[in-house]
Length: 344
Ligand code: DOR
Ligand code: ZN
Image 1 (tube, rainbow, N blue to C red):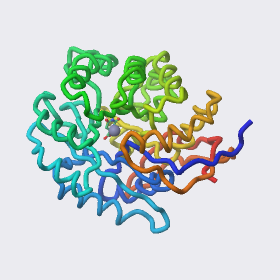
Image 2 (spheres, rainbow, N blue to C red):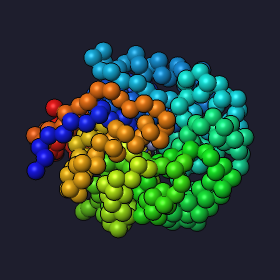
Image 3 (spheres, rainbow, N blue to C red):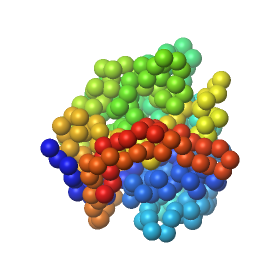
């Protein structure tokens, strides 16, 4: 049985770092686990300009603890009115690594998102030419589509036509949650990749309703049936280079989660690698972990892999019950639990 792994230092290809006091606290959990992270732009207001992206990057860097070597990779939030030149300049100036498509009202702070993907075709044309990845929150938002079907319907209604119109555009189907998405990406062209969160590999939708309503298991896209979780576990451990690590760590203050209308999002940054390792270990696929965590992502983005390595050891570590943020706290995934893998 493997008790120790040495792998290239991993990156997180999808994270919410927030701003202000929340940023100050949560960023160091991510920076402790990962060398780089693709930072989501869904602040209020969202990051839609090069100037805002640059300023946010500086705020992030200014609060990362000195001993941690961490590079935030910034993204531009696409709106109906986005100026394609802003995208071009942001990419050329090394501020934006990718741009993010939130269908309007799909999730937290997506009110400024895209109402019809045709509205961003000029931006997508520029991105295709540059080789700049499009990151998609892949859910339709019509009220007549069941919440558990939104991802599968997105593939048919939005993604397939989009890929037809932009065959060379690099697309990351983010935080996939269904067998439909897993199969679609697995069989798709090399321009299509996907991130998978640690939590969607660990639990299915029953967890949200286990003995009562459990707001800390609520995120978007919402967890699906067991057969979907099993399909995700199959593809991430398959050795396919199209799947890579993206935690979707999305902290909210406890009062915003434990509420009559609680926010979507799990804060998994304190235990992300431990959680992924649990899955790969259970699947007997620890030999596939390095590619998923440290190689497939940079290869897809056309970035170098990290040069340092980290040691992961099987020795128990306890995840905190709560992380204090100002006068409130955030409850992490696996709060108070012991996990088997530790960052040596
Ligand atoms: O659960 C989620 N939380 N899903 C998202 O897409 C956004 C995120 C957030 O920003 O809280
Ligand atoms: Zn997200």
